[in-house]
Image (cartoon, rainbow, N blue to C red; front, side, top):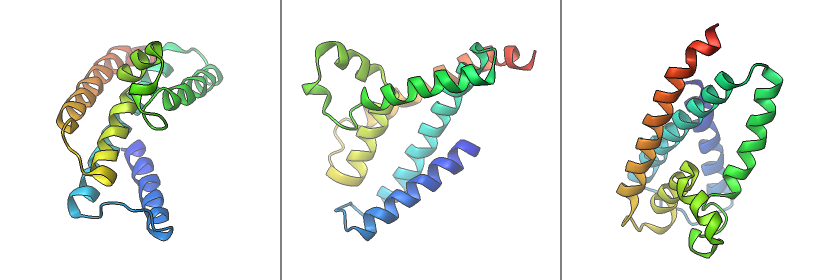
Length: 146
């Protein structure tokens, strides 16, 4: 829940900035509710991802360092900056496996393009990745408690 509140706070700030600088966003109840839903899903995934990393690391410093080392490449290996189709083949494989790519594509569909052709597929893949992350984090959690 903490990650969801943090993510929603950041989303509200970004949407307010977009409104202030007059970015052409599709403002509708569907786009706002869809954005909230996707941000909560993304928060759930990255919370589980953090829990998995914390379970595998023995010290807080190592966890924080590894977490930072992985966060930036996840962003650059997603479709947030470049379309996956123009990436090198090896990076396309990474981008397709990257949950952030699906979050970006869903939000882009909801807020910018209004093209929803692959949105259900992307949403389904994101939910599957979240479920896998929840299972792994749940299995590894006893390591944190010991």
